[in-house]
Image (cartoon, rainbow, N blue to C red):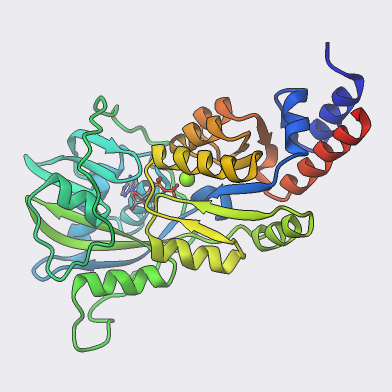
Length: 341
Ligand code: ADP
Ligand code: MG
């Protein structure tokens, strides 16, 4: 049977929108020494918007968006939703794609009018086709991985629901002369904290799409409070690229960054952190975070934005999508320990 003090701690949390799955999790939360965060949807709002579409020579903005959206209409990823929304806002005709496969943490692949299309990270495009991207300096030597899952179901209108509040797509030659290469543009955009998505059709890069996220309004304050509470290290774990992740981490005040991770890499890093700090919490929201949430001493899911998989795996759910409840959860956990001992 559960101790009455734990029960009151759980009830206290529930009143404040903090759902502990058990008393053991409440106690564990009081012992946490390091906290890892997913980036998109956790430190940021996850409400992404397209900010730039840059076609390569011989292609147009509309063409890049149209081809990317054909595949992204199948995706539940916030990047996919941002691209579909931009396409709708520009009233670009929707074209169908077939044989669409999503590769978590990397991108999406399919066929449009019998031509192979890839949308995602540069590394992902290179691995899955015979692309030659001039001057592209790969930051990482990714092993080739086959992630083939079943084809995704046909998207319904809710998947294509609008997320972006505003959209500005610069037209014409807005970039400074002399014309930079595509990788240079990409790096420039990433240093601004944006995520760059590459679009290719039949072995040809037709353009890049930059998407921007916004920090959660309370993120900076939450990280500061955690330090004041004696949390020894805060870490961001993201599938996004190093430059984008560094920029976001720096703005929020996070101590350490691990970028360009696949879902299983997040699990490995949680294990490493556990050997250093024993009790490690992980806060996430996506399907790709579920394995890391399961590995963490306390897996914490964001209630409203979180995927069902993340919610089911979590030990603790922050309802109402409020990151600042993390601080309250630590207080409740510590108090429950004091009463018991
Ligand atoms: P995070 O860890 O920030 O939640 P993900 O692991 O979901 O990020 O994705 C990592 C990267 O993989 C993205 O930044 C993007 O480059 C690429 N990616 C993932 N899904 C998609 C998609 N549907 N379309 C295009 N790119 C994608
Ligand atoms: Mg995420």
